[in-house]
Image 1: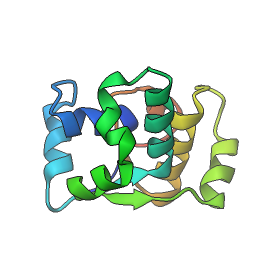
Image 2: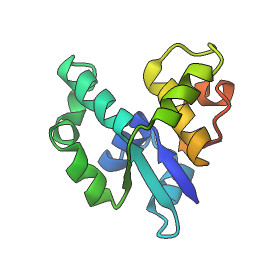
Image 3: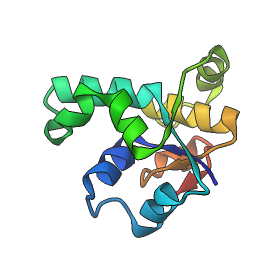
Amino acid sequence: MRLLVDTHAFIWFLSGDEKCSARARRALSDAHSTVHVSAVTAMEIVTKWRLGRLPLAQSVARDVVGAVRLAGFMPLDVTMAHAQHMGDLPMVHPDPWDRLLAAQAIVEGLQVVSNDEAFDRLGAPRYW
């Protein structure tokens, strides 16, 4: 399975939080899955932590690269193709983080691991 983990799902998975569904946890832990974490997720985690909106994510915010590596996941950079596709998405969801993650998933042929149904409206395949 080729996956792109959403920001909250990533934090929940790392912390063992039950908000991460059992199905998602199994897929993220499966040695046969290729799991990507976007640079968008790094930006969102650090920004929201600094604003006090993700207080429990301090250790991840301080070393996102290390957290991704420790989890055995792959970093995914943002490309011009991702940005262009984001701009072409319908305006059914205004959150720029989610819109760029959706665009990355679509362009790269990945399923977004997320409980957020906004990805469905954006046309990104979702796994939860």
